[in-house]
Length: 110
Image (cartoon, rainbow, N blue to C red; front, side, top):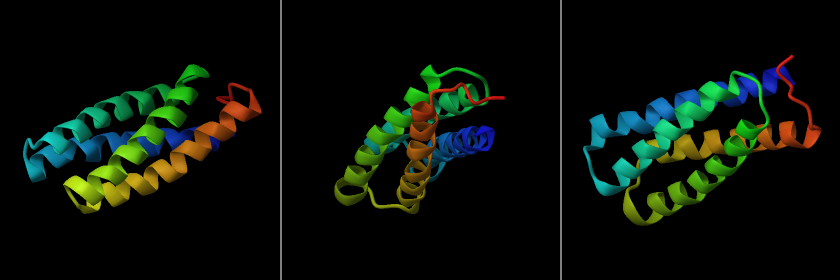
């Protein structure tokens, strides 16, 4: 179970960095700024997932779920780019990882 948590943390850290890096590529457009803000939050969640605690598992399940829907909307209606697909795939892994850890009911750091 520790591997699941580390996987989720690693993916959230990568997602956080790549969300913010869109600013350098696409500039400060409205949807890019929103994605970058999510990236900062994702990075923080990734850091906390490296530690113990159950509250962060909820953040790791809920916020990527919101991001998944927001990113899908962004892709189809605002700004199609490969980052959105990459982040979509990451969310599809992180959400079940955190959900499984919540369901198991243990702080699975050890």
